[in-house]
Length: 146
Image (cartoon, rainbow, N blue to C red; front, side):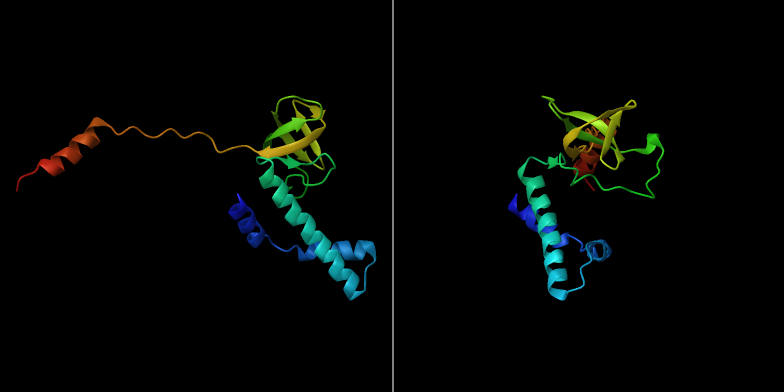
């Protein structure tokens, strides 16, 4: 598990533009304050990675942070939304909901309060059975006497 955490931290991209926007929004102009702000942002991102790996893949989002990445311009057809495994607040078992962005989770037009999420696993891919024709060709190759 530690190797996965370290690898993800090493591959983490530094969000220059987001940091610049945050500095402007906070009115920070001092180099020391800017460095502290950037360090705090990096700490939050690293802690999110550690939490995600140490909680069986679950990402806590009950505080409105650590939500799935939003793609595009924000306006999307409801048929194009991604599904996630989620824990609804006060629920006992996980379920699958669509993420509409801005912290909104729904299914069939009903919105839910989600406290944790994780991506859907890859679909099951059964192994292809080796047909008799293939087996016969392999056996013929070994049994050839030339």
